[in-house]
Length: 90
Image 1 (cartoon, helix red, strand yellow):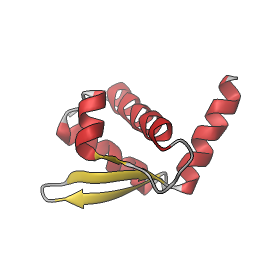
Image 2 (tube, rainbow, N blue to C red; image 1 turned 180 degrees about the horizontal axis):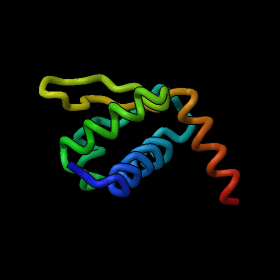
Image 3 (cartoon, rainbow, N blue to C red; image 1 turned 90 degrees about the vertical axis):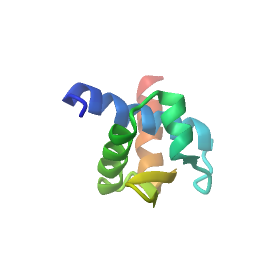
């Protein structure tokens, strides 16, 4: 299992990747396989990060067998958070 700083990095990377992928369209998402490949996150760490972000109300996860995310999308709260971060970095 990843250390705390790695877990935080994985969560941030997932949020950023989803935000960039959806381009403001909440109906779009990425498969768990796409996230894992794009971010080079071990499968169990991806599942843990998605579980955490879903519990925070930031993402929606459709789960496949074996605790594997099959589809991941940003929720309204997640989009708002990413837009706020984007404004703050400008």
